[in-house]
Image (cartoon, rainbow, N blue to C red):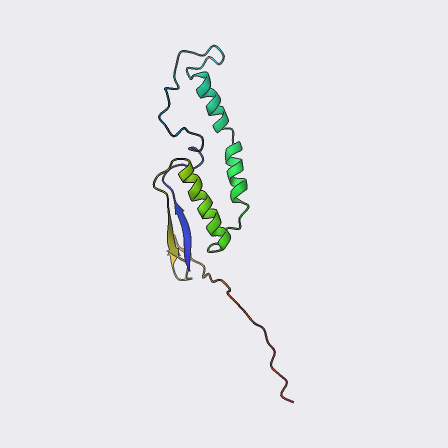
Length: 129
């Protein structure tokens, strides 16, 4: 059974609130409010996107799903992360499969054999007497 892995080129959380179009220069004359060379709008946007609140929200959302490799919840988590990456403007987002058969090794770590129970039964033989 394959393991789902997400390959993303770029930083997921850092790109969360960046505009998708080319913004005007954030530089200007020294601000009378802050004394910075950044415009007041750029300073406010920087504060809002780097507060840690967004990162906390993303981790909270991701932790709602069990991420046992190969499970349905793992696939939901992978799909959510891929969707967020696309939402943030990343273009080369793809999910790649890697075998998890108990023999494949990744960085000297042996993959776990994974299987899903589709059905089952339990019975007891009749006594011979």
